[in-house]
Image (tube, rainbow, N blue to C red; front, top):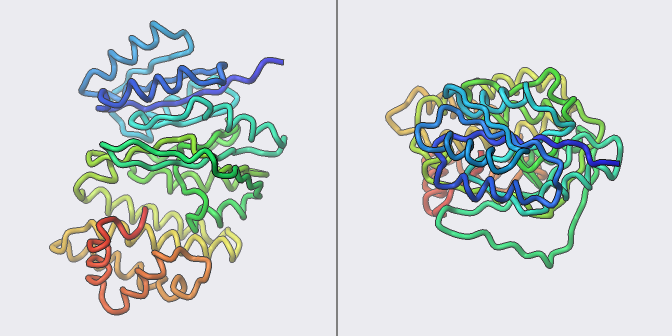
Length: 326
């Protein structure tokens, strides 16, 4: 029996420097039955032409040219036309190991009730090369939806990233990424998981996630980050009522981590923004501090905030890295 078609969706915007490595890692996958959708999201550089050139060389590649609408819109446009039985997202400044798709597919096929297969990410900073220790033992976990949400919201084995996950297409029947939002994965991935029977995770690192200064995460603060943060928190708080108590506790920790992450970026002169975020943290910090399952970083941040929020910023700066991931 032929392997099913897997659609790989790659939004492209102003990444001509990184696109070749990304696309080459995809077209050389050991799993061959692929539909590769490159979405030129109105890119001002040569990404559009580069995508067209790749399509001429590989018949599995489809190129969609569109006006710039952001990452969510680019993914959604591709989802609407994708023909695969499964969807996989890869950001155009990242790349994957040559067995990335095969590893995820094998996990998916290990149980007919698995709706999402997840592999581990290797994060590396621009200018460096990721180092992977293949001698470590492979660890696999099979979870139901609630167990997956708890793991994800506590940021234990994996996070809310859309990438590094293979999805059955049926999950996207009524779900799309919110157009115009930053941190759209946080607002969407949990909804997909809630529709699942089972989810499989492996600590096999096959997705290489590039942290670069010009990315959303590395870019200077913009008010849109605050606005999207508030929208997402409001959405999560509304949907939390339908979750189990255990999932709610984990989600509270995730909300606090996310809020700290944005607060540490907001300039001191933006007093109203900072005050609003501080109130959101104050409402949950005691519960997170007392939650033995919460991330150590989150609990430390909550503890320091009782002394002063400025101390949290100093601690993060002293550590020469962000105290909390979003």
